[in-house]
Amino acid sequence: MVGFVIWIIGLVLTIKAALEIWRIHAPVERRLIAIVLVVLTSWIGLLFYYFYGKPRMTQWLGTGLERY
Image 1: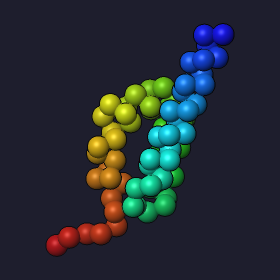
Image 2: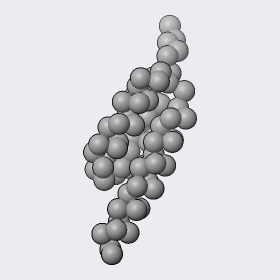
Image 3: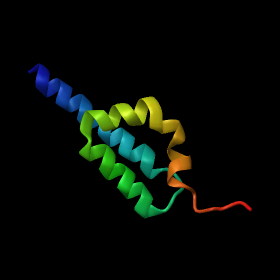
């Protein structure tokens, strides 16, 4: 039962992270790659995203607008 609850929490957080990444103004290919990496790496990907990557994600994905 505890394992099921942990799995549900992970599922909800993964969907939330994927939606947050999808809302970033960046090329679709880069957003999809980031979402797939978070989903495939499961809890490690979620921990990385929420504790380190979330504020940096827009910079990593790029907006497609280069300044000179």
